[in-house]
Length: 216
Length: 216
Image (cartoon, rainbow over the protein chains, first blue to last red):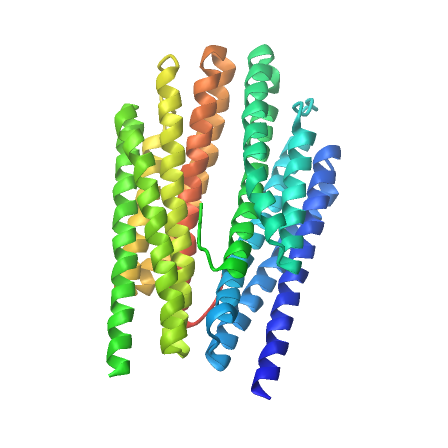
């Protein structure tokens, strides 16, 4: 009986993490859209949604502690629960960064329109794939997919460097766009951080599946 | 007997976190020094030390899981151990950011010398106080000090905004310093992140002491 309750609780926990992941995926998609169109109304919605995600994190955190206290899991079950406690922090940080980017979108809208840096769309696409793949690999405990996410982080870092250098050139050519370029610099920094969090989650998934703890 | 072993293990865990905190404090102090003097040799040492801190995090992480599995702690003991698992992530991220700043110091050294932005020293001082106070408040479970850390985060955020605006002005006045100013922009972003991690730790300390989970 107790074992059955435990399995149900673990499943519920797993599903709640997936639910939290889907909400953040929605925020990420909205952020990408808001960034493309400098859409202030959408940006505001993303900022409000961040509170919902914070609450979800706290609930899952409490559930994890309660399950450990009541069920006293060991070995792979315990590894899964403690990893979930780490994963939800990274998911929540991704949502934070969606809100951070949204603040910069609101700021950009107040300034004269400036061209978005080249390759921003490519960076966004690479980051988005990492986030989606990391959530997918959690759902199915897909080690191969998790490893691919970890390997993709360099690509996003490289886009960051390329776009940063482009922004420097843009600022050197036309000093009127410096404030907007600084906004974009911060935005690409947050995009890079989101990819880092996806990588962290992929490392925790590796730990859940294999027991190997290798944190970058 | 088991209880006695458990108490010893908890003490050992507590001390290992303090040890990890001291090493990061050392890295932070070195980073501040390296930043003041654009000291490349010191910056390189900080980057190497980051590996040591990663290893320490992994060891403490494993210790936490082993203690939970073997001792099956409940209530406040379990809360402390799970909080430590979160705290060491934040400590490790602070060390990462020391290494990130060090990379930018090495980069700055390759470029023509540029004046550091005004107020950078004040931002550094405010951030440093937060990091030291948060580690201190962990050592003695000092709730008041932890709350002060949380309250100080706004000050560091405000310095970030002021310095960012100064850097924008500096770039508008002299385009030759744009690459260096972009390095400083990234550096102040990492300083701000370090203050955020100190805040996170302070929130976990509050949770350890009171059981109230309020994550920002």
